[in-house]
Image (cartoon, rainbow, N blue to C red; front, top):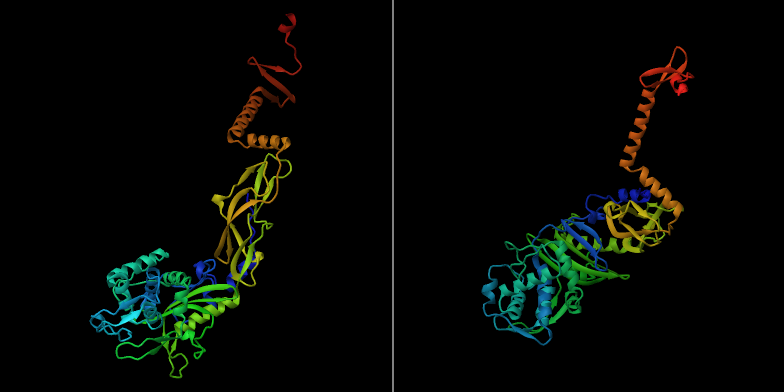
Length: 458
């Protein structure tokens, strides 16, 4: 028999945080946002803090340049000295697409590092095409490599069909998949350095003198205080009519690192002052700010904490043994949460109902989910909290209990009892008149006390 420890505080917290059916959306109610799709996850341990429509398919816009850049960085070892040539038909390739470009002309040559700055800072389509053909020989082959990269980092709901990021049939991704790609990209120092550059001196080319590139990511610019976030270590923006305003960012502070993705953010005037605002930036900053202020890693299981108990047989010293967490576990939770703020849900099918002595402290007897609200923070093995020795008295008691609890034995005893009752009823009859028992023997009644004369003669 198991006893469940229900912690009242956890239930109260669940109400306060507006826990719904989705475990990943436990903190969504903490923010007031305008974007349709949001996602924030710990890079350190994978904990999802915010999830609003994160598995909904959406046009990727220039966020696909995360995958494009990573394919290039994996294929080109020396990005500072490797040079690619702009294809001669670049204008016809991009004609009528309304793409953001660097106005390259066919035949111009640029270093890979220059082209990477173009696609990560400005989402320049002519730079993307040049890199694709330079790395893979064709745009189609490069798109295939992008899809292979996405799959390699766990994206199972992403499909690319072009390298420009323009809306296209069959091209889609999700915020959760973008986060997977961005988290992987953040491990590459070159990607981080380029994607967070605010300016870049681009070499002279064609009719253009040496010029300066400026980032489109206003979260990197202190001159935009409503967007600016100083802790970004990697970032990428995008925007199309189907994707809305998008941003993916990695931020680190106080030893914690998170990846945040916002898609389908509106660009609207919310203050009525005639100035439209990019709510992808606003919502991304809000998610990161709330998380860094409120979420901390805390110990949520104590190895001395009683979670339940299991019946023990064959010991006279104890008839139950405590179940305790087999190990100490930490998790990202609000800073006020501790071991008393979580609930253990014992996994019935993986936990023993009865064990036989001897039981050693630390023996694994079951499993439990550790919940905060309705969010499963961890799964922990349950161990015996103390030794329970075997002894002869316990064995005798246990065996007796086993015997007398057996359905077959119980049935046999009932039959014997029933037979005895029948025998008594048939074999003894009470004479109400004389107040004496008369025994039924040989078909004749005999009064109690009479002798058998025939027997005396013998």
